[in-house]
Amino acid sequence: MSEDPAPFREALALHEQGRWSEAESRYRAAATAGHGRSAVNLAVLCLQQRRPEEALEFAERAVELDTTSAEARATLGTALAGFGRADEAIRAYETALMLDAPPVEAHYGLGCVLESRGRLHEALACYRRALTLDPEYAEAECRLAAVLAQLGRAAEAIAPSRRALDIDPNYEEARRGLVRSLRSAGRVAEAEVECRRLLEHAADRGTALAELAATLTLQGRHGAAIELLRQAVAERPQDPETHRRLALALAEHGDLDGAVQSLEAAIALRAEPAYLRELTNLRRSTAGDPHLERLDALEARIDSLDVNARIQLHFALGRALTDSGAPAAGFRHLLRGNVLHRSRICYDEVGTLRLFDRVRATFTPQAVRRLSGLAPATGKAPIFIVGMPRCGSTLIEQVLASHPRVHGAGESPAFGEAVTTLGAGLEYPELATELDATDLERLATGYLAAISRDAAQRMRTADKMLANTLFLGLVHGALPDARLVWVRRDPVDTCLSCFTELFTPDQPFAYELGELGRFYRAHEELMCHWQKVLPPGVLLQVSYEELLADFDTVVRGLLAHCQLGWDERVRQFHRTARRVTSASLAQVRRPLYRRTRWRPDDATLAPLLEALAG
Image (cartoon, rainbow, N blue to C red; front, side, top):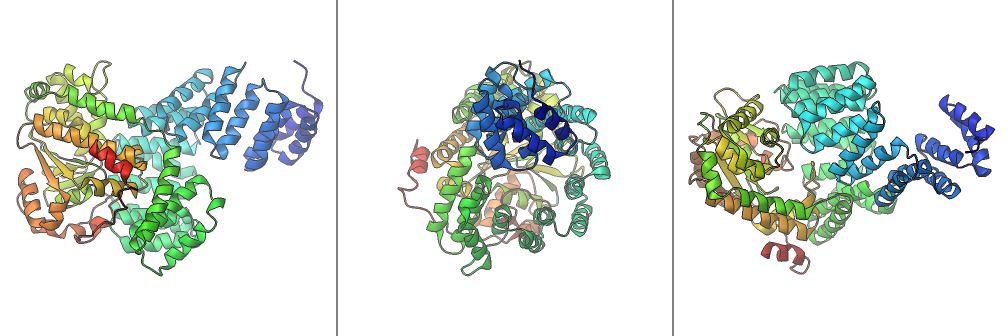
């Protein structure tokens, strides 16, 4: 291999010293003379300076100069990823990895793009390969932890976050990830310690205060959490994201007027489509609303927005136009927004629907009877609320949490996390066939320890993690005194309500009408299966439409099923002060009301209607 030319060597030294302007002129000279590594480093320099167009230009030039350079291909992948051209970026990284001496960054970069597309298990493998090649790669440890957290494996995510911090103690993103994983794993006191360490040297103090606020919220210290966020706003009044964080916290705690005011402050500083969408979700738009004018102004230049901003804007317009009396126009925006978002995420529909089938095949009546006879009664009777997203489950939880003997735990991952600790190498659901009484006792103990930490000793806990639908046979086996509640709503209304929502965290089945209908049908079949195989009296079906039509009768039946007496406070559920984080957080702060949902014509809904019909 020929020696690098003098201009390149000089440029490299200047680049490392941070003398970017001088380095660039020398790189350009060498690249003009046909030196490929100079073009690569020019692209890297432009990426560091946030000049994406030039970065892509130089990366493409580097590949032209040396088609066998893995470094050039990997840099091209990074430049393409910066433009949201994920498929091209993946091809560039994969080509780099097939060439000689690929840089470790190629594994890491490919992992980042796969992660952005929702291909989390593949991303996990990429980060692990990067760490095999470079055990001191702090960024790879940090992303490895982030993916584990996204997969619901928060306890496993703690170790790589700590390793990243061992490599770089000032790595703020890694410490934020550690805080979130500790919180999700129920280690809230440790999360608070790490939050305070984060605050000591945080460059982004607003985010650090927000993390501490979220941690204090989990400890029930809601007032202190809100005050921290107000402090962040006082310290950074010109930072729109800080206003937004306060708005979301206020909304979760029921102060909708304060939330709207804070979001308006954020929008006045920067009219981000995401902020506008969140404002649309908090208050209904009306004809002539200035909010609609802001949305229209953004739509006029939608082609200049990046993909994520366009998605946010389409969902905002979908909701705002529907509320203000133009539902057909609103639905056209929802269709566009859903198509764009669906193109950015990975959804294994075959694997998802097969999982529903495997659960039904595993939990036969005989299997459920076997599990039911293993575990002794715990004396604890948590309430599990399940159903489809947007079925009314948050309303049911809010009603129950208004009862003085019930603590609303929200969407807790505790049961699913406890299940992952079981089995000898088997996957769920097949591992259920191997469980014994000791396993079920450990499952119950682990779940109850996690779910009850915020509730008073004599209170019942209501857990509305909808994914627990998959585990109801195990729930009954481990916790025979638990009460199960299935909230069911009209299929088309449920699916259309899902289609209007940009979910956090994502619900990957919800952004294409056919996929949404097939998921609904598979969910329905599984719930009907549970009704057949579980003992009578364990699972109650609650109709959302019947609840709206006759609140008292339905709620009396719900309370009786949960072995709770009537209490007048359940009628005033909208006044109950508690944290709500679901997409329905604004609706459950208002008195019950009936509203006719507009439906598109059958031709537009054909993929959904055909899927629901099977």
